[in-house]
Length: 115
Length: 113
Image 1 (cartoon, rainbow over the protein chains, first blue to last red):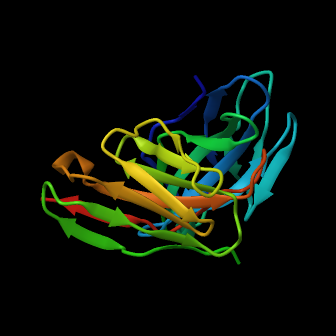
Image 2: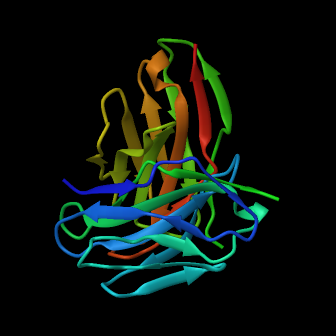
C-alpha cells in the first residue's frame, strides 16, 4: 500500500543552522506531496505542497522538490529560527475509491531550534 | 479563512462510556476526515466521508463509527470507550480532488480512565 517514510527525530539545531528533513514515499500512480507543520498544542497546518514531478513547493523559507526518480520530497530551510520548533509531517495524497483522495502521513519529525 | 472546529479540546471519559466527538467546517468541503495521533505512530486515518451520509473506513476503524447527516458536520463515535483509545483526535476537511489542501482542526485530547 501507499506509505511515507521520514527521518526519525528528534532533530536539534542551533539558530541559523541549515535544516534537512528527509522524506521518501511509496505510492501507485502520481500522488501529490505535502509537508504539514504542527506547533505545540495546535492542529496541523499546511506548510507547502507539490502536485507533480519536479515541482518545488515553498513557504516561509522552507522548500521541497518533488523527485519522482528517487520518490523523495525532502524538506529544507537555509537558516532556521527558534520559532520553527515544531513537529513536521510529510504526507501524500492518494486515490481512494472513485475520485476521492485521502492523505497518508509519515510519523513526524520533532525539530527543536535553540537560540 | 477555512475553519474546522472541534467541539471539545479536552475530555475525560470512563471505560465503557459512549463518546461523541463533533467537528464542523465552514467552507462547504465535500471531504471530511477523522485521524488519531499517537507518539511514535504519527497520524492514522480512522474514517473519512466524501459526501453526506457516505463514509469509508480508514486504516484503523475498529472500535469507532462515524455519522455525517449534514455536509458541514462529521461526528466520531466511540461506542464503548476503552483505555487504548486515549489519544489526540484530529478532524480535517478538504475539497474533492487531487492536490487539494486538507485543513485540520485544533484537535481533541481524549483520556479514557
